[in-house]
Amino acid sequence: MRDSHPPDSDARQKELTRRGESSSRLNRSGRVRQKQWTPKVKTGCVTCKIRKVKCDETKPSCQRCSSTGRKCDGYNPVPQKPTSKALKVVQMPSPWELLPGDRIEMESFQFFHSVTTPNLAGFFDQGRWACRLLQMSHQYPALWHAMAAVAGAHRNFVTDRTPITVSRSQDNNEVRFALRQWNKSIQSLQTLLSGQDLTKLDRLVVLSICLLFTTLSSLQGRQSQAFVHINSGLKLLHHWNLADIAGCQSDEDLDLKMLFILFSQLDSQARPYRLKNLQWTDKQLTPSSSQAPFQSLLDACVALEVHFNHMMQLFSDPSLYTHGPNAETQTKKQKCIDNFTDWDNKLAQFLSTTPQPEDKKALSLLYIRRALARVALTMDFSKGELAHDDFTQDYASILHLVSEILEAPNHQTQNPPQPPKLNFSLATITTEPLFLVAFRCREPTIRKQAMRLLRRFPGREGICEGMTALKIVEKVIEIEEECLTSAEGACTNGRWICGNHRVSLLQFFLVHERQVKTVMHTGEDLVLGRSGRELVTTYW
Image (cartoon, rainbow, N blue to C red; front, side):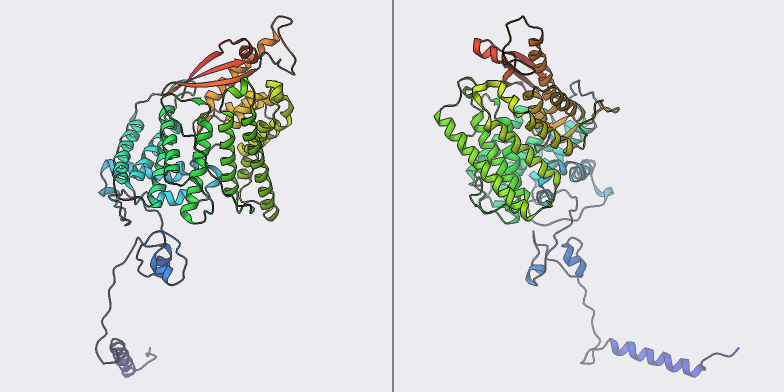
């Protein structure tokens, strides 16, 4: 068979190809063109990687993107152990290059990123604070080690197989790892605070570490330590003039809003406790004074929690429940009512322009907090504990909203077949409202449903212990139902439970780092000056 091209044609084609390749290597001057070699960067921003250009790696947005008017999409979080406070991100070494301790820290970082982070800020994080917190950990060793410590404690919290009715062991590998990381974080934090003037980012990191230390203490059931860290964070907020969030718009200000929500909720939870040897700050957080509608549910949550915190400071005075409100208290109470009314109007304006909010559960949580405030501020104190009977429908509405958040139908009457799993959240979500409904509402159906949800979804939110809350409610019901078998004439008026036997005052005292004493006073106890009945519970 003959070839399709003669031999001389193939030779000419090879010669033309050789000449073309030679000419392509020549520039206009006739010299051979030199290839320019540039180092490959694997730690640049996402935008520069896509464009395949060198990134200068400036945080939070690189100058290469900013100078060309492009949006910098940030940096993929690469787990690594920081060695300094420099803004340089070091490529993570291969697993076989890590020491055993470093490998455990990497695993803890992954656990914190995938499991713990969603539980820090509740429904209002929207990826802002959590994402930036992970990025900042590469720059601040104190933050890195604090995250590792929390991850160790959280993993121990969710994987411990000890029954929830029995106290856990406080000595195992996870607990010891968390303690070592906590000590490293303290040392790095001291170095950070002893340096030059702190930037706003530095201060946000320090406040975040305060919250992580609070989280660590709460997970371990060490409430006294949690109170210390909450109080320290609140004092730093005021000392650094960060307690006024009016006009917050930048990314750092969005982080500050998340800090505001968590600190105000933790402060509201801590108010009812009798804190010995701890001078608690009485300064108030300051919301924005703008009359414009909210721009997001995050803005609405910040304002609501600040108003709620002001209300809790008002109601933390025990004399209010024994002698009633005086003129000064009435003025403060009316101020709280006006603030919440203004909040209602702003939220209504926001929802009129945003009929489909970004997160329905977040909106339900706002409604729950607002309903609790409405009950507290509109209650007739002259009726005593019987005033709660006027809000039965409000308590039923709160219970319905909680059931929607937990995705638990109200009609369920049997306990789940599987043992309940422990949940943890630094933000206040459902445990506190369930406790208040079960404690204050005497309508049997509503009260039992609230207790059923507390039992089915045990956990810890901030410093609020769900299992302890359930034990307190069970003891309250035991005391209150004594009226059903009391001598004739010992009871007074009241639906379901008479006014004399209703528990109208709870006092909480920390007697040990993992124990709390609850003193329960009935209306009759307060009138006769009798000491209340005590319940000592140990945190799991």
